[in-house]
Image 1 (tube, rainbow, N blue to C red):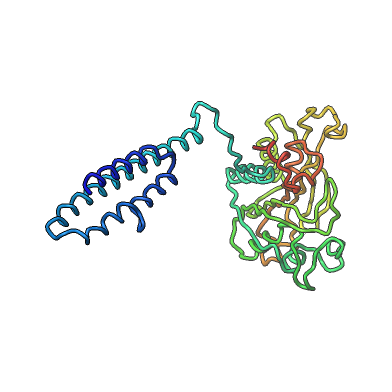
Image 2 (image 1 turned 180 degrees about the vertical axis):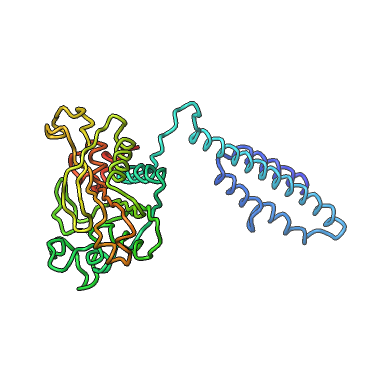
Length: 340
């Protein structure tokens, strides 16, 4: 029986050595060590032996079984190492290859312009304040000297929620909210989104962004307004920029003006960009109307100031020479990548 057991072990080890894959090896394990395996069958024959033979033969069977188990374990290890090696070969990374460019987000052109404008005015001592986009009629119109019946109140221009509440048409309501606190001096810029009932085209949108400025103190003159806005224009467009102020009318400022800058493409000589005029309209401004001080609770005889409003989208169109405002909102990655 010992001789047969030794031959059985050698046969098992030879089969293990010749196993081609993990499945083949598992079949060999079952055929020898499974419930119906050949080694298991030999162990069951121990009952047929005498007690003094059983102990010695049992030891021999366990040695053979352990040898088979050990060879199976080593073979499994080799198969595992081979599988890992093949996987590494398939998934090998050539570190000398150039890496793939990762596309990351960046600021929108309107955000870039806003940050530039904000930084310019903050360096001049202005404080940034904000206000609600859903505003009361009182702040959007009445406190800014826009009485009932004024064309700016026409429902074709304004999104009304009810008789007293609307989507703000300008950021000027923030100025009224600051003035009614009665704390002087005031030197602020207010920025945010505004809404008007306009048709969408190359130069209009029902929603856009503004930055408005307000300075109120004693002995503030139109000269201060011109100096401030000229300083801004040179910082934003370049030192060679010239400015001019044309008379205009706004209900909340008196006198009022629109500011133009010399064309930064042709230097003022006239080109397609400035429609051969040499000048480009930038913003509206003026001295705060004394009536606005009264409506906001300030003494019109003890304070003077100026205000101005700048369209963020308009500045973006001019700075980046974009001819259609709709491009700013279409989220076309091909367009936006130009501002990375």
